[in-house]
Length: 319
Image (cartoon, rainbow, N blue to C red; front, side, top):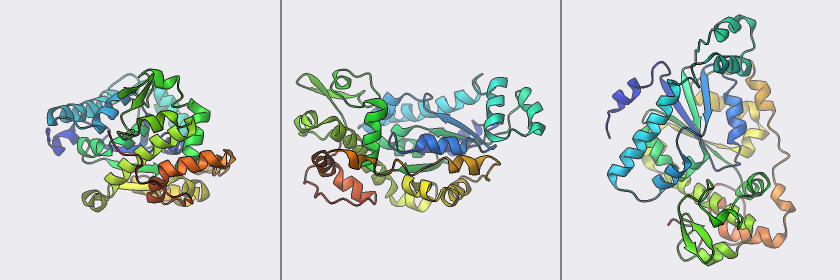
């Protein structure tokens, strides 16, 4: 890859370190970023710096030249943010002071727009489709993967975003469906296994939502199980259920992994996590849950979740 890893590192001054947070949408990544934003050493940014559609593109087979363009684009998006007025502004410095400090002694530098962060933390859920892109593009970055029970994720996707409804499958404007193939009057996303188009279209919206979760976590797990990834020490997996059950323990370990220290407001932010949303999917009809587990059972088990429903032989794969 070019430029060299040393050359890439030199591009980032004054913030010399990067970390990436990813996990399927509605897996708790927003909560995690709110926690990390309380760290005075961290500049936390969510989405918008690299188009979601390009992450879908990176997850599909591409020529080497295209792949290198995508890697450069990702680096450029993060680098450009750090030189922009969105970062170097009094308002941004004041917002960070309020989130991480509120100490009167730190107010004057914030009013002057002075920054002291040393780690840029970027969150983008759709990196779950292609964590290897980040791995290659940012060879010294640390990655935090947040995983949550896909049955709860699917429930939240419907309640929050009305994801993958027939209306949303009629065009390519949603984050879930920028690359598609037509099947009748609807568009089937690339991440649905070929030959399963009709099954996807006939599935109810909840099953479609867990389908994308299964596609994401399967790809993320493939990445996490690579020997070079496991040996690197650069990637940490956090289970959402564990984080809200033991926020201080899990949060401290995560912050230590990122090479930072708990801030004065971090403990309170960690305490905002709750377990009320765990298992909410059980309110859905039993037949719907069974169908969802048939589709995503292998991915659920692979991620460490118990499933009673046997999985069929043909479940979610790639394009």
